[in-house]
Length: 283
Image 1 (cartoon, rainbow, N blue to C red):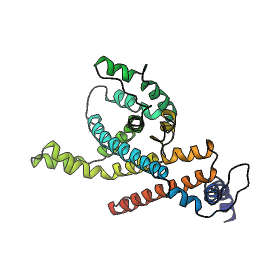
Image 2: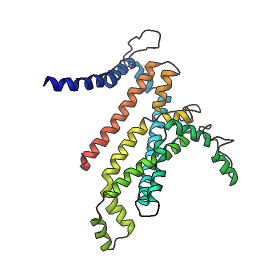
Image 3: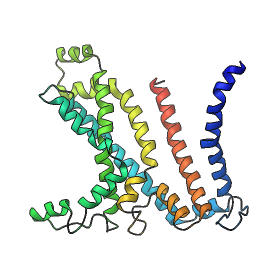
Image 4: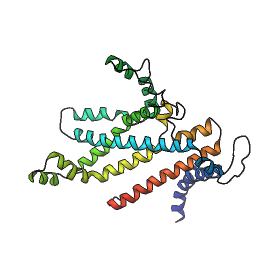
């Protein structure tokens, strides 16, 4: 018994040092007015009251939910559609699949820098293409109207291959017998997909959807590399605001408050997904 405890003890210490202690330290900072190098003074829940009365804070939450909802929904629909195409037999299928997942191999910061060049108003390829077809160029990253949409577009480009792989795994796990039985009964391909194939692969897709929602709520790299949250606050999400409050404005108490609120949002979504998975019979 002592030997087993000695084996587990390093993992417990690592867990306490890397996760549990930082979390409670963050909770403590959110209850103070700590601004280095000044000492921390306890203020209770005043930081949370101030955040909940700040329209900018609600704007950050709304942009976070918009970024997650629009991005993940689009990635899921495109992923299922592309997986259906890639699941068919054709020459060079393995090569196409390999090329298709390349965006997943690129670091999000690098993705942001690459797309920032593509979005450049004067020299970017996207506006160059628009000019060649007679469409006026667009200020993609420098306008409050398009900044968040541009960030969502880049997120979709990078993470649609992930949902495609998940959906492809679900498609390949679907047994052939129900599909063949539906064809014998005269069902169309459209009806087979939506009434037979999709319900049978929904568990796999749902798990991938859960991972993408949780990950997208915490998105930082792409938005920071593309716009830095600007212009103004037009593309600033809650996670990015947490970083800016700490390392640009040195308001560590506001940063900790935002981090705890973001944690609660992610926790709520995770609990919703876990409960839904139990109802669907996913263990």
